[in-house]
Image (tube, rainbow, N blue to C red):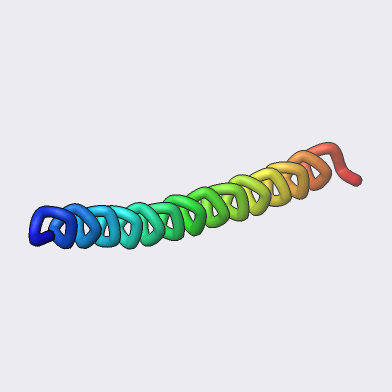
Length: 53
């Protein structure tokens, strides 16, 4: 019975770890996409300015 409890606890801690890791990766990807969009917007504004529009 003790082996089963250890196995269940290991699975539980593993699930919690991967859930937290999923949240961190998801937030990092979201922030990266937002930064890329902002850079594209700035680049487009610079292009319009350079072309006199």
